[in-house]
View 1 (cartoon, helix red, strand yellow):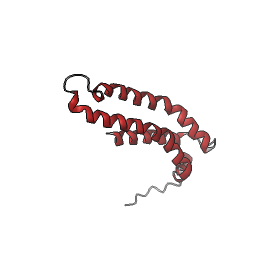
View 2 (cartoon, one colour):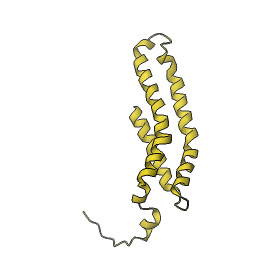
View 3 (tube, rainbow, N blue to C red):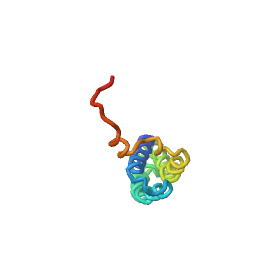
View 4 (spheres, rainbow, N blue to C red):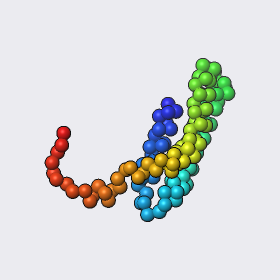
Length: 118
């Protein structure tokens, strides 16, 4: 569950990063994405942690059975936050992944022959 959540957030982050026009430097684009996504990622992570806290603290009847699961999810969410907000932009900067993806202007200027290749 946590891996899926981290992957989803990272895909959205990267998708919007590639949609920002390349008129500014890569560092400025990464900072812009951090500013756009920090609040949303922090709020959803904090909300999920607060929702699972009663289970993790073993409040209520039957909470003891779900306590290990709640603790595992809370731990994963706590690890997710710096991974997406700090490590992902650092890796994007280090590897320069957006250089390998053609932007929309490259796709529009490519000649179209009308042939389909299998």
